[in-house]
Length: 348
Ligand SMILES: [Zn+2]
Ligand SMILES: [Zn+2]
Image 1 (cartoon, rainbow, N blue to C red):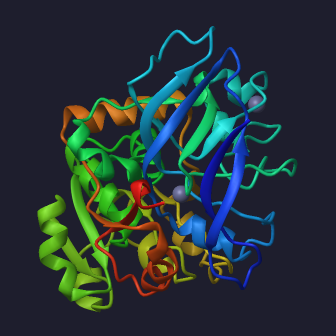
Image 2: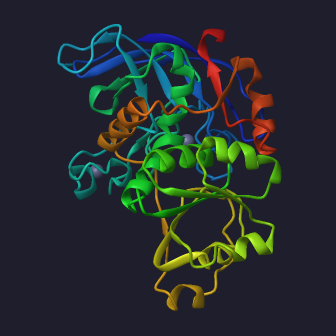
């Protein structure tokens, strides 16, 4: 077994604190990664604090992992010692259901195994990226082709990047399409960058007039202040697709009215409490849809990382030492970060 330092929550109310855990020795199909950076996702906070009522303690969060390969099993063909590698939200799935066969392991009908907090339908706990080393089977390890100096800014691509890339691709964001991005946080800022790089006309919706310049710099053609009835009215029936990243309950009707006929709004934020019910008339009169989307499969995650490397897309981050994590959580709750915290694991 491989001993590694980590940070863990031991209860829903306790702060994260130093912890020690053991990783398995790499088996034939395994890759061992020295973790260099780990992004801080809202899911980490929700899980550490038990807000989704499914947390196994001790909880070591972290599923935006980048680092260097330090050992590989005999059967590993795609990675060698010294390679840069990434691990996202999943480390395993059943491998034989319909979804797994189609490369959509995130929708595995038997439940994928989360990088932390174990299988989604329950099972042995797993420990995530707030640690120095991790052992993952090769088929769930991603190649990182970005420049090594940008590694901290690559980490958030492993969750925030794929969570936005997958629905943008699925619903055809590209040239000639008007795409709304709701919310300018960790997810939203990646959504704007990726939708812009895909060639779409991007309309960013934010409640904060102060984020207007940022939004345009990130790639939005239009920044619409969602608290302004005039600005919202100007977007009515204009959008082909909306990617809604807001993780707090809010009025979905305000956005449904902005979709063209047959338009779709995909929700990727996961609020602890439901949104208020939406008015069905907004759906039936223009055959609009409300949809959801969860991260992306491994093949698509690799495609996203390669796309971002080719287009020089990186997350905007604030790099922190691990002992700042509890403060970082408090600041995240106030959206006081541009736009993602990333832990420098050398500090552990
Ligand atoms: Zn995440
Ligand atoms: Zn499966």
